[in-house]
Length: 337
Image (cartoon, rainbow, N blue to C red; front, side, top):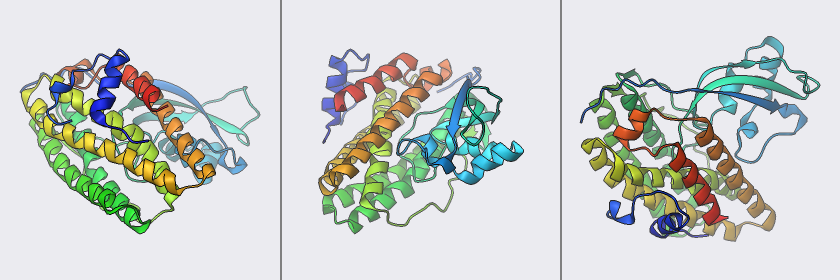
């Protein structure tokens, strides 16, 4: 399906979401920084990937490797397994195997207890999980902006790869041009968010130089686009739109006005790519793409439910609070269902 961001916002408002009116965005300071981050505890059971159970396409279990699983089972070194499983927008503070009598044993699955802080962001390149910690951070607002700057930076290779893959699969030239334009947008966003982070006393982590860049099958491109574009990019665009109107700091508010308009275009591009790709895929592949979107929607809903940003980030940077984020995710799922 195609989507228009202004129409989406109007429909979400009709569903009762407490969003700002569309006039808050044209197209589409200072801080004490005293509040600490609020990590959450989570218990998960991970299926043995060697048994072929896997997980939903695009879901966390689908990224778990047998080597990481075996290392956790055999020598209790679960670091790599935890990083793989919780790669969807979470900072992993601690994670390890715990005993349980609820199933047969490691041949079937493992139980992990983790302490995490979740962050819901936009499109990420293949293999990119949670951002590393800032190189320097004087306060939580700065740390949040530094992570956002990093994620804007890694979006650049994601869009460049999308443009190459669209061209290789014979997509309309307009889609290829929009993907290339989006990569350029993200370069500017990375610079803007880096400046904001530094304004608040934080230094973003360096963006890696190398990411996977081979041309994948059209189905693989569509699966990633459904999860990273139609779901995360759209939520990211809605969040940016709210920040442009709600941020308590005028410098943040001014920066987010331009970013929000760009992110709205990126979300619309994701749905355009989705519509084009589905027209080229068979029924079975279209079903897998749909399930990937549904799995990512579940993942984002869990992230929002489990994690909470400090109140100061909500006030200063304008990031919506828990209740608005939950309603935003539920409303988006209802609109595109």
